Length: 494
Image 1 (tube, rainbow, N blue to C red):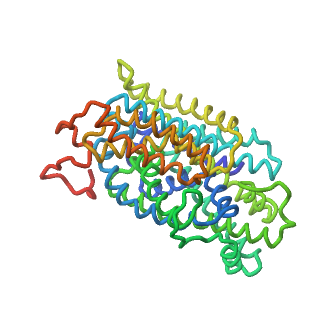
Image 2: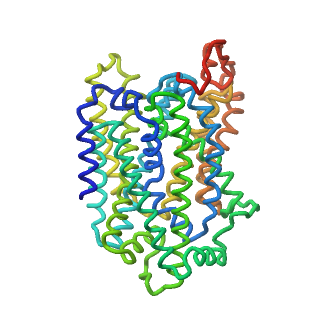
Image 3: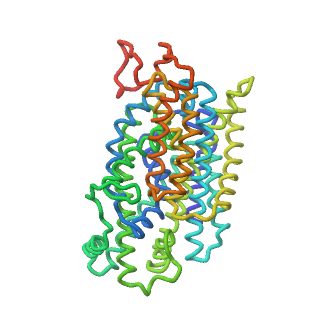
């Protein structure tokens, strides 16, 4: 309760400063880059990852950790491809770019797909930790979901983007401290400490880090590097949640610094979480009598927290899990309210909303979407591994959106008609087959969806849709735009 009081109190302190949608959605583009970077980490490393990463290392292996630096390698490409265009066009919703490049129908489609993804993401992010915690603590499942959803909705509605970012900073500190405490406790409780943990992991083939074989049915070092490199484009370049935070920074240089620090912190925290999974495997292999019957999957970590750690420490770490869940919810509902207002309501209205009306609508949307997200958390069921569930959703809706952005930036002749044909007739049916009728590992769902959609969209644009070159005025939306002689360096303030 003390944690909830802190985040709501912080939002109340910011609640009087939102005068229009510019402050509500982007905090007037004046947020400090360090706070934004920590906020992005907190939202990306949600409770899904906090519980899911240890689960994967415990049940399969820790090969995913070797792919983490691949996102850092992809960062310069993401920064140079996407951020200058978003910055130059002064977008609030990144799907404004899609509308300018391909037309208003493409903007509706991309934004709608992204809203579907966010609803699934938030539902799983609320349901999974609540289920895990209720299983091992006796906490009522519905009460846990409702409390997390309503508290996140309340402070997001009150404080807008500033509240989301500053509460996420608090949540980052809590979840990072919790991960460190769990790591230290496992090193202490496993006889032989870190050396024994790594020895047991190696003996049970949980460290295929240098395995250069390639297989669609399992994860190893090479597989993970390729997948993470591709995933980085969607997660950091074409997702409204992290990009909207980065757009709240006052200059391009700050966006770059925030993105690089975000990657470094994610690598450190995810490495800790995967190590925790290996530590849990060693601990319960050495002391199998300490693991209750029926506890597996994403319930392993909460069980260890409750039954192996002192009460005060376990309470703090449970707060970290709740913090991770709420950082996902506040991110999702704020981004969805932005997309609905900017991508649907404003373009469809004959008369523009004034600043007061826009703010009222934005807050109303936030409340409604918060309740919807909470309801989706109550309705989600039959989750077969929470990281797999997120990958399944992303393969259907996030991958085609990333392909649309890349086709817009990288090509001159790609068009919405070709993308729509590729998405409906090839990408989605392929995902149905891959996810239900093949032994393809879930880590491939998103990357395969994006590569297939991009590879098919461009030929379809040339064959089935009206072929035309972009007029010179529209080429500014692609990588091939001509820079004016006096244009400043990308690393200077726009």
